[in-house]
Length: 332
Image (cartoon, rainbow, N blue to C red; front, top):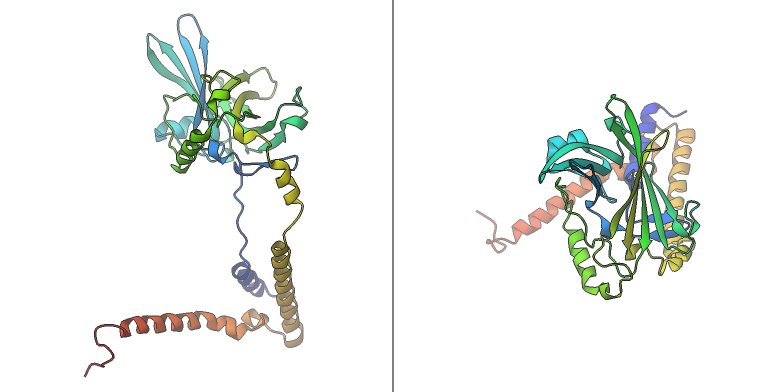
């Protein structure tokens, strides 16, 4: 049986030899997969907002819902963000009371996100193709639906009410998805200028003149905030965008099931190397009783790699310094 120290050395070696790309937990916007089809919605990344207003006679209640499907929301006002829209939120609500043109922030809460560390829940995102969705009555609608969990609202009695967000990305060949969006009073940090540049390039080719829907309408619209459920409240949003269309997606679905020659080639090489090292380690342990680095095949060469690298660096430095102003003459 291998000693625990030997196992740690072994695992460390394999981690260096065969590094595995870490997978970021949570929502990924550039690979939304449902029913074998992959959508790339990364152009919709960054804070996007929609407002719902309720006339309460003496005042107006405006609730702004802000969503970022690519990464967590970050409010510029950090103290407000930590309290109302904590780090990890993907959808946040900000409720303001407007009276005599004076707007006062009444409350805010996260509706969805990876908020377990903030006494919320996990996002547990789910993608579903609209054409095959059980909740869709019209199977002709093209697009994809996203469900996100993890949010919570603290009620007046101090109890937390779970929240959920459902976003339907509906195919609209004439809309990018950033048209006529609301500019919220609560400013969010835009993570990267890349999305802005990408959207500007798409705007140059967008066929806005062929819009069937009123071009003045926002691409992101509020549908409903349902608080009638027994266990949780659900926010429903609709997002019209060309990136929800399935054009050329069938080919992607077929490609996912057929690996290329190079994929198989590298897989065979990888498995062969793993089998070779495992067999050599087993042989060294059972035949020679090796321990530690001696378990590995070619252990002497592996241990010499740092020294060989340092020697190579030294030679390079000496070569560069040797090509200075002395032109081959040594100092006396």
